[in-house]
Image 1 (cartoon, rainbow, N blue to C red):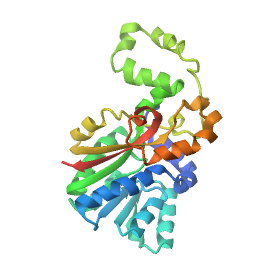
Image 2 (cartoon, helix red, strand yellow; image 1 turned 30 degrees about the vertical axis):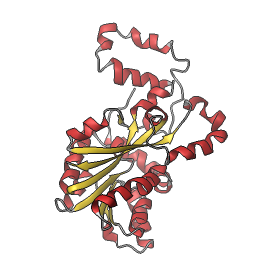
Image 3 (cartoon, helix red, strand yellow; image 1 turned 180 degrees about the horizontal axis):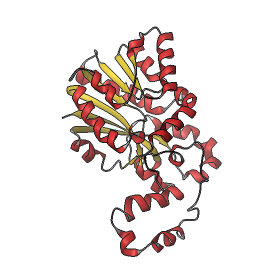
Length: 288
C-alpha cells in the first residue's frame, strides 16, 4: 500500500540517507548535461541563468557553474544543504549561490528572471499541496520561453516487476480509480495474488524510499497532458535507471547486464523500452 505524505517522515529519511544522496552519481545528470542542456542553449543562447531546485549535495550545481552556467541551488534538508554549501565554497563559488528552503524559496527570485529550472529527484517526494503549488512558482520565475527539466518516478515500472509493487500498481492505478473494488469486492485482490508468484516480495526495506516515505509515481504516457494543464509544453522524455528483467531475478544476471545497461542510459534513453523497463524519466518542457 502506498504511504500517505508525512513531512516529518520524509525529513528523517533524507537526513538518515544524506551522505548517500550527497555523493550519488546518477545517469540523469549525464542526460541533462549531454542531451538536454545543449537544446536549451540552442533556444536560449550560452548565457543561461538556472535554478537547481532540490540540489542535494551540490554536485550538479558545481558542475553547472564550472560550465559557465549562472546556476543557483535550493535545498531543504539541513545536512544536504551544508554539504552543498561546503562543496560550492571549496569550488570557489560564493555562498549566495546556495539557498536553504522549500517551494517558497522560489519566490525570492524576480518574475521572468530565470532561463531554466531543474528538479532532479524532487517531484516524487513533494506533498500533494507543494506539488500543485510548485508549478505555478516555477512558471512565475521562468522567462516567457523558459525551460523546465524535471525527473519523475515511472509508475509503469511497478507494473513490470511482477512483485508486491505490481500488486500495488493494480490496486492504485486500475482497480480503485475505476471503482472496481466496490463493484467486485475485496476478493479481487486475493484473486490477483494467485496470478503472481511473488505478490509479497521483495521484503520490506529500511532503505528503499517506497517502503519508508510517500513517493509519487507518474505515468509517462499521460505526463504530456499533465504538464500542459500546468502551462508547460513537453518537448521530450528521457528514461533512466533501466532494469531489463524484473528485479527479483535481476541480481543473477547483474554482471552480464552491466555493460548492456550502460549502452542504454544515455544513447537509448528515448526508446519505448523505457516506458516499462526504466525506474524513472526526465522531462524537458517549455513554459507556455
